[in-house]
Image (cartoon, rainbow, N blue to C red; front, side, top):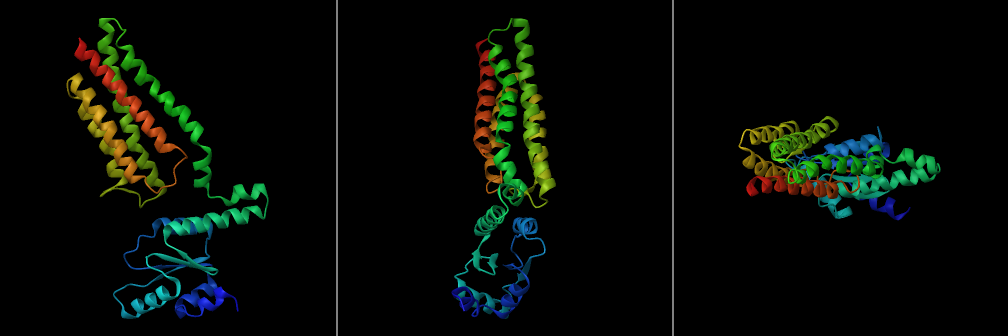
Length: 271
């Protein structure tokens, strides 16, 4: 009997029986948030995993978890166990499933690796150049209007500055819509205490209200909103599978937008 098999002999019987039929078992409580884990397991091991809910309100369940804790060192819920040993919490599950994908792909050759890696990971590795081209392209109107207003004829300055404010409001609406897309892919996606669709419309509404102000105040408000939306996204997107370099790109683009808005405001103040 190998070490893994010997160790499993001390695990709760319910868990050992589950592992006889499934490759991975998710141990959860009634309060465990397993939406991301379910999505990963359904994508990588469809029909090959099962969830055991051990509510801590039951003395029997607490005893089972205590036995598992003594045998494996489990100290978090949800806790994931595979036939070849304990996996750990959600971060360890991600690594475990990623390693399985690479191993499975290697046995089928280079083409197999591309099939085995989740599509979200392929997107994270492959779409960054497109995002950079489109992202920096979207910065061109900011720079052209914010700095071009300095060289414009007086009759064109107001047009350039109003166009700058309108464009800023449009882009803020676009940034809010990112969370609509995430919600369609993951109905559990939230932005702090708000559901994603609720937050998604907030930047658009605030940008519209900013445009109702006089132009100097509108430019200042829009600059503050860009900074606020970036801060919210950094918190709410933490831990999600994003294209490589996405947040760095967002920071650069936000800085460009704020500097351009500030340049437009300086034109007004100088006048």
